[in-house]
Image (cartoon, rainbow, N blue to C red):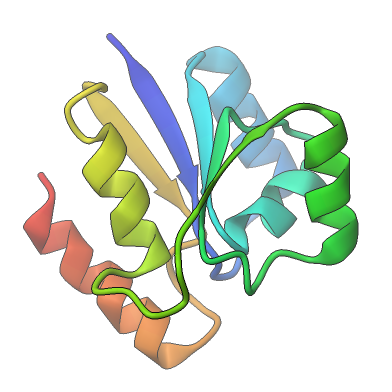
Length: 122
């Protein structure tokens, strides 16, 4: 079974150990939607790719991942999809399971959009 972990720009709920154990026990690829890279960085994880307009990623995090040769897929600020949806559009058919991490919390508009994405993507 192919697994992906998608870090969004909400709040990381629960202990860091929980997420690290999940990822360690069920190997998979890590992706970030823009500011989700900040959370991934706090967990000392290196994603495969980072998507978005890159307006939420901290400079030090961006520089760190550039040095690690992480692939950035940059989009214009003016776009028809959220950064989260851009990643899901790209990876949805490549994986059997996609865990979205930190989809809740943060700004209410992003939180509601992420909840709506649960209905759109099986």
